[in-house]
Length: 377
Image (tube, rainbow, N blue to C red; front, side, top):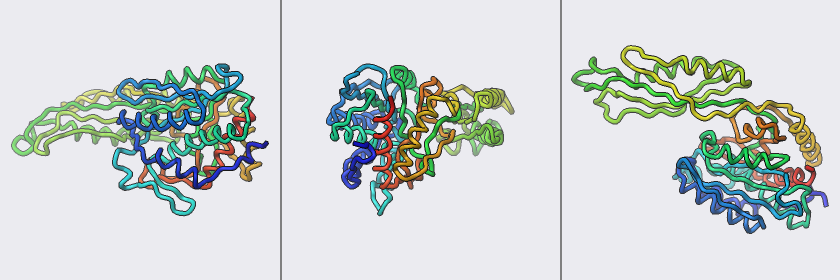
């Protein structure tokens, strides 16, 4: 049987995807992420996998590893790597409920990347129900901290990837449905300003505002953006009383670069901003980094060529590109393990209150993943 001929009931898929979406799992809420992992572990077990729960660390939730029965169980095979954390805080469902409108379905994390994780499991289940045995054993790894740079599970992902021949990453499809065959480097930074407190009404001139100094630094940092290396500040915390000149301010910055050389220059530029000005100290410390996954690696391109053939049978042309917006594919691709990314569902609005998927892409992507599982050797 051709895996592309497998039948998928879209309405049934949505009904079973719904609990995944309605279990909100923001990265920084370890208990919430663990609740999502409970659901995934149950569904993977029902699908026949041997499931391991891996405890979380560094304040993050735990991970789930599922290995499916196979004559070559334990031998190098295919790793499907995905994350179950989202950027949406608890309560987002009130503003972005799970809702279907024609071929569109909304919900927090539905595109990034619970939809892709779900269709990966659906593909494996459908193959099993059809009595089809993949040439290679299959392992699924769901992790809890990708949205903050994977600080607690990078070594786990790399260890699992090293045991396998191929890595599939069901991150959201590119806007045209294409796959990702390389990713830019990303580095994070923690920023801090230290000033001098004073009463904002009675003694304003005696203070040195850490907030004002940080605001100036943010403009300076973001002005360093070029086509080759971007800089942005996305988090800032400071102040408690409006009548106090704030003596401390914390922020987080991110830089993305197309090459390692560009990243190194960007990191050096950020670190060079440190110093003292007008009585306020500015400090920069390195956070987690995703390495450059160089595109066009032979093993990855061979996987892409196979996926392109499958998509032609499905009726569309699969494109490829190197992309910004890091994923855990950065790590496996950097390791030189053949990796194909953005195999997940089509949609738009990820990381926003309009996050949505194209319902019709559930079956499409499940068939694509099933085809890859059956044809990778």
